[in-house]
Length: 151
Image 1 (cartoon, one colour):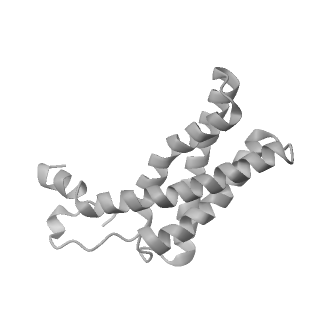
Image 2 (cartoon, rainbow, N blue to C red):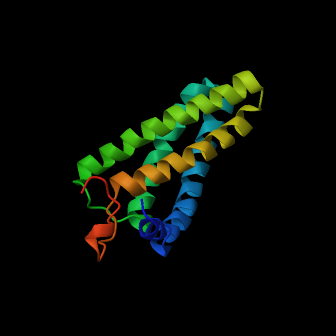
Image 3 (cartoon, helix red, strand yellow):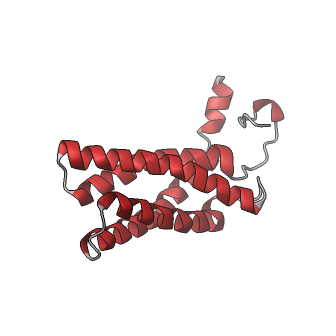
């Protein structure tokens, strides 16, 4: 990657998407955490099962908000796009649940604090996967500096 490509990557388009994704991610994270706490404390489900179900639900919320406010849908057919979102999210789920397990079982954090930290850890993977591989990126004027490895 040369300097021009790096400068382009750090352009306002990326920053704008990242800023919007922070808000979308916050809503999805609140969905995730709220459902997680409900399942752990009110239904007394195991924390890993609760984390998995809340994460899957939050992924749907995230996808719907992303295609509405952050990313342009259309790089892939709709059924493939949602499949790719969930595939990327399952990697995120592995990161999330592994971090949650380590922080809760080994480090001894409170389960909700561990969940918050695990969610924060997963944020960067989720944004990167959506930005780089799943959603449509604006067309660039100069194809020689295109950063998409699949084109």
